[in-house]
Length: 146
Image (cartoon, rainbow, N blue to C red; front, side, top):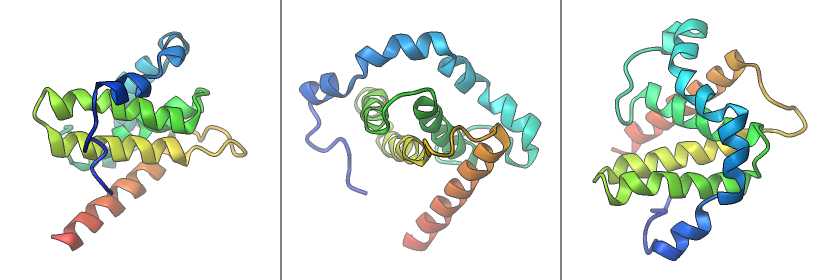
């Protein structure tokens, strides 16, 4: 995937911010759901639990779940992808975590695009399994590229 921050500027950032969607997600539980996701994983799928370190399995699973949850709560998938790009821009530009920010964005985007409106929200166990499959495939692919 190309670098989503190449030639990214303040105007791009401002247009990516999902300002109109923010009240819906502050009150509907996304933040609480996401913050509790590590404990949920530990409880429901302990084999995927563990410390979160940039670019590890836990990190990728949580990023994927975060993107999925935004769309499952009603955000348009492409707006969720744009919002993820804006959200991860801080790590890319300000915190010097360029590789991690790009990876986090890609995982958020994959999760956002995985939500199926016909199927509806997956149960938490199934979502964790879907995110883990994605993360394992991603890790295997990055090992093949090296």
